[in-house]
Amino acid sequence: MYIVTIFAFGFERFDPMKKILTELMFAGTNALVSPVLTFGLLIFFEKIFKITTDLTLLELSNSDSPLLRDLAQKAAGTYNHSIVLGSLAETTAIAIHANSLLAKVGAYYHDLGKGMSPKAFAENQGETLNIHDEISPEESVRIIREHVTLGMEIARKNHLPQEIIDFIPSHHGTTVINYFYDKAVRMYGESKVNINDYRHLGPKPSTRETAIVMLADTCESAFRSMNNPEPEKVENLVRKLIDARLADGQLDDSPLTYKDLEIIRKTFVSVLISQSYRRIRYPNQDKLERAD
Image (cartoon, rainbow, N blue to C red; front, side, top):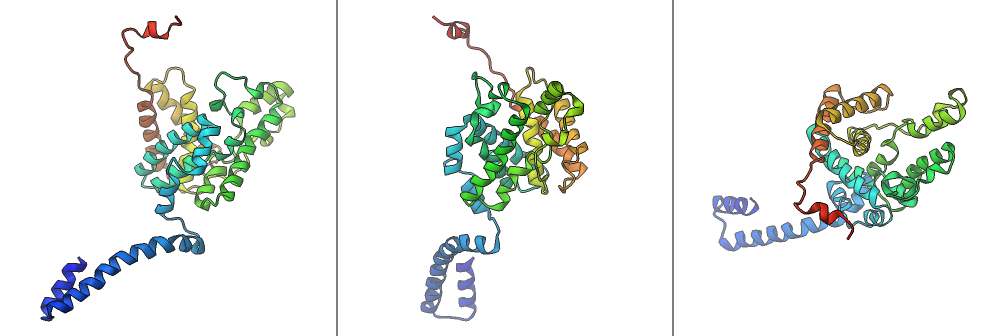
């Protein structure tokens, strides 16, 4: 369009070809220099005006980024969970016209802190002993809460944008850590247990993207624990989990509408069911699985 415009005005003014070629030379130089200056100065504009561009998000979404590579080495289960969650959050954000790239990258980094004590979390334990069987529910809650504060410290130390850091504490909001609350009730009696001592410290999600990641994290984790993920069971699970978060007030600060929540529910169900596919067994698979 630059070239077409120069020729159009040049011919209209009956400019000599030498002048037109000179203007084309300046136009070509401008076309080369402008992107270089833009990309080179972009980081300074982001720092000064505290904004995060899609270019930064794309860079952070690269699996070779130092933080993601470190998480994959220290806590492979958490890393895989984060990547799957990113795909689920991205698809859902597209469905409700939210920022899909921000939702995906936020999901990638939401559990950074688990890399500091990976064996304290089920997805990294494998067949090893669950350390929570040997400690009090109060100590377990401290460890679970700590992955949020540690994650935020790591994110700030590595200069992640605030928009990404916000996903770390808000993906749990102020929800109750039910497993250890129930354990404490069984051990001490309900009257001696303060439920607020077993809540995450928040804050609650305040954007559509952080709310999506909270709901996706809840539903994806519960889905992984299902023995027989039939479509009807998956739909019931997702609906009840979203309703529970809504009833608990975890979405009070987010701008999600009831229509958004219905779309989110349907998208979660569709994506999760698609992830539970089964493959046909090989004819000699029984033999392959036996120890010789």
